[in-house]
Length: 478
Image (tube, rainbow, N blue to C red; front, side, top):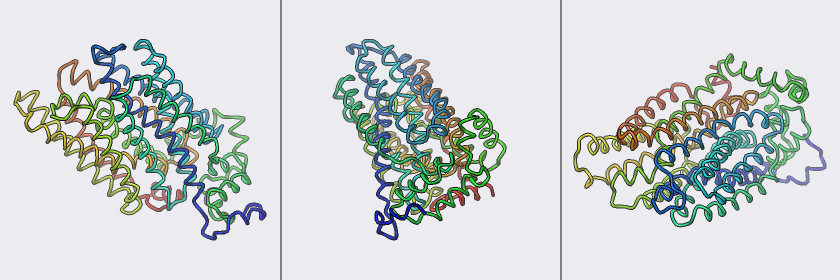
């Protein structure tokens, strides 16, 4: 236990989750800004593709801009490796906000498309950095009973940021939108300045007393000896005799090599990596990334009676509500049932959208009078993804990756995610409009990818609901 003089601070024998919630709020502000980066593309592309726009983009330029965001996402892991295990999770959270300010600052001063492209590249760096570090941090500070709900908060606030952009984007100039979003980034950095460091990181680097004090603060009680012992056992502290920080400081490259070796040679680590890669694969090749970026274009080509920007706002509202509902069910019915329901329904819905476009594009049939069917199917598909696979992705990442290999694993996953996003975002418009294959081909591929990925995830992933890190690692090793 910590210093007995602290006992008066925590009078509730059950403890208090106040600092868990406050830390989550700080991270939520950051992930809201990440959602703004994600949601910026669709309404802004609609403006930039207009002939009367002061800065115009062709379809090929638009696909390049989206791909640059993904490339920035892909390069972020190089920074993550340098910061998370050396400077800590808290400093890494703060660092992830800086490229956001650069991104929106460049959009504010942009006079031509090249400056916007550069800004979106920095936005991609922040996207990749934040989506890797936030789940890592929250997974390490949250108690097992709250970990699922706290993890889902990331997806809720990302959806909220995307929805916010879909609402203000069509009605404000690009510069005004960037000013508004920059103010949220500054607020997020201010909130994150006060969050505590991860006790797992502090134990990992040998700062035992500081780790215990931090854990007492997070749990709102002085008797945290049982959880401290569990943290030590989870990261194998007994094996390094508290000298982890010295090794990391003196031989950082060796630590990366050793972590990479553990990742590929220890079966449970490799299994966790494959599981998380499957989640990332279905996120991008399952269509959600494409729909969030090119949603207004897809709705316009669907020829619904509802204007494209209104359709996109409806989609954003539905996605936000769906993700919010996940908070109340993820720790009740578990991760696996959510994944099964989400994958089965969303794949079917996207296949319906693909059939509609096929009848229009290759069957040359007049199906516009039935446009509400694919519109509702697309909404249902995104809604079920948002209540299952998408929010659970970050929860599972925070739960399944062992602390010793978490930095290198999230870095590799970030590279993979950025690469997959770059491929889908660059070539979706090229396939659908520039090469004139239409929307039917990619939507059919989306459905197949969702079904197959869901099947493999369910085969490999054990149920993690309510289990400690050590229990999860034991199940992965089985």
